[in-house]
Length: 545
Figure 1 (tube, rainbow, N blue to C red):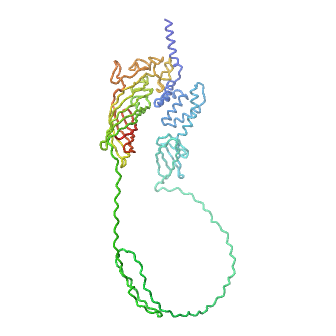
Figure 2 (figure 1 turned 30 degrees about the vertical axis):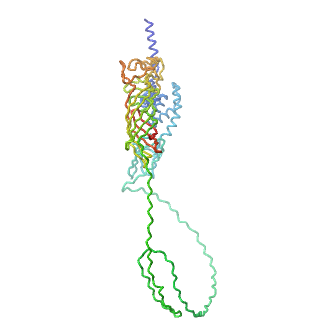
Figure 3 (figure 1 turned 60 degrees about the vertical axis):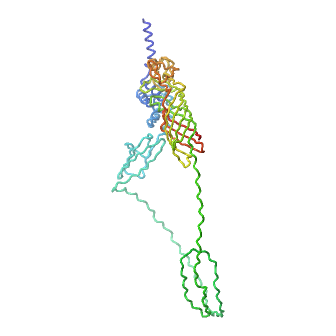
């Protein structure tokens, strides 16, 4: 009897040896480190803060700073990095602690470059100037102050005799901003005395030297005027006046008749004979010309004929569905980004400004190994899911065409669709999972961690010590390698209904697209939309029949 009792105490001693030797905070530190590695900082931060509060370790402080940096608390992260970087190796530090100290020095320098700074520069010296940022007074505003990016800052400035200035700003990463401060004096307040400006004495110029006197210039002797004899007049012969020559006249438009200017009688000279005025000097009336005939009107050019409307089109193209990881979080934890490619063949007919499109499509819903935990379940219910499903879809869509030019070369398209899908091939696999960092045989190491490092259970309590994760106590009792989920139309005895979607409805709303028709019988379509199976993107070509 003593031998079994001794054996029992030996087994208990082995099981609890690790827990007895573990220091305070080690459990929270291990869980927080695993969660931080997987990117679950919301879960990791309280665990690591609790571990640091019980006992400081560089190996847990650096992941805590990493999570602070991801959350946008760069000042907290920088303080932790610099504190760890300044530490020296102490007795009891492991290799992970030494590696964390070395990494903290590099991360501190990289993070400091990301932290934005603010400098407040007064436009002029103000007496009693006080600058507050978020309610805290700044000793020297001209010194760069560090703040977290993306968080609003309230800057308030006060000075004697000036109105209070308040301004709100937000800094971005790596921004180095300088804020010019210019205060308005209060009405009726005396302005501070201005400093006298030093004036320079007027420059004394040297006295100018008197110019040398020039000798008086000698004037040339004046010449006396000589009396000139008047020129003798020679008798001139009378010359007969020639009649004015007639010049060819150009056609002039009809104008109202003007009176010729009256000529004043001039007295003939004594030496010239008088000549009687002839009839040629009288004004002649203007000649009326016929009005020119307008040129014949040119016929207007005929506009080019519009393209012929095609009513029936046959098309084909590529289309795929993108499922982002946040969509998995609507139903639980885990998941990953997934893209499901496919293609379609369509036949469309024109109904005025609308197209009625009938199409048959193929989609491949292949998902690689992905951890997933349904909502409301404990961490021990994590599973690794994968899929190689393939589906056919038939749908009808109504699309409204909005032409963007006269020839309808470009058109904006808006529509919606409804259809049905059929999973005709493939399976959905589900397998229980356990923490990948656990040590087989050591029950204390099987604690929640990074789900993306989880491994498939090989069977109940396989590996040894994993009975809380790999067991036969719940609905997933037989979820081990090779298990395929049944159809959601079947419900095995004593088990929940299956989740494999064999036949499913398909809805597309809205659908937005752009159509380009370079030739009369060829058109290219680009479209995006939101569907039941995820955001849709498609590119295709149509041919008129």
